[in-house]
Image (cartoon, rainbow, N blue to C red; front, side, top):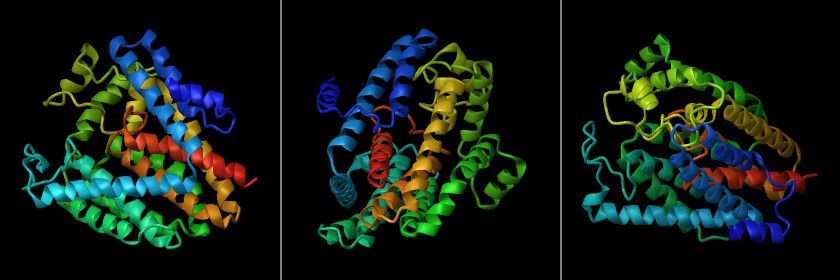
Length: 360
């Protein structure tokens, strides 16, 4: 509430702000009307609004260079904390319930996949600073962040995070080139649509590829969860089940998910796009498609303008944008309150709006 008052006082709630996320926040509150768990929807909506406003405040009150340096320091601190815990072999760092790998590391996080995600992001930020050698930061900090993040990523034994790490390295390096960015802008939406359809409906040829690589054809049970969730979506397609309501113990989740998934109820569907459908229905997905189209449009506009001072930021924003879209094919962080990757998504969306305005 204080941040909202400050932004209104400073006239920062204006047309330069991307309102997609704010509209979804409003819609999350409205979904209380048809929510199957109104109490959880209200709680989640309050947290979502707070998280979104915090992200918007950061993007409006800090310069691009300040945001990137803060990110580097934050990820460096995460790397140092986790490395220290690993070196001294604290008991809390091990994923004890993980039976497929010996001594899988989760660090200070609840799950090794989360450690892997943040270390992939740390590698991306560190590499960006290394490539932007004109930045006035201690050169050893980004190098240490990349090396330490790489070691922790390996120790997490998360194949998903390892692939994401390779992806972010590839993107950070090649988004420095204008032609690559142009090609990427035109291919984002078609590739994401194909990715969602292939993963969720898992055709036989895709299962055969996974098995040939020694991976579980169900993607560690994800396809079983998705099958149940898709059935639930078909049952209530338009408005969904209410924000944060479906993944509570209720007749719908028990009927559609637990009847097939023989473990405890998951906290989400492990797919950000499926979660949007189950929580917001078709209306919410349309809003996200509009947001993706907006981002692609702004990226196209800014890549056409040769602004040396902003090119490096455009490259990182594009890299992070693709990284998060791909991540949400197998995990869920879109529209998640108190989630760092969601905060950064809102921050970079509004940062891109600022860059686009500067290029006019």
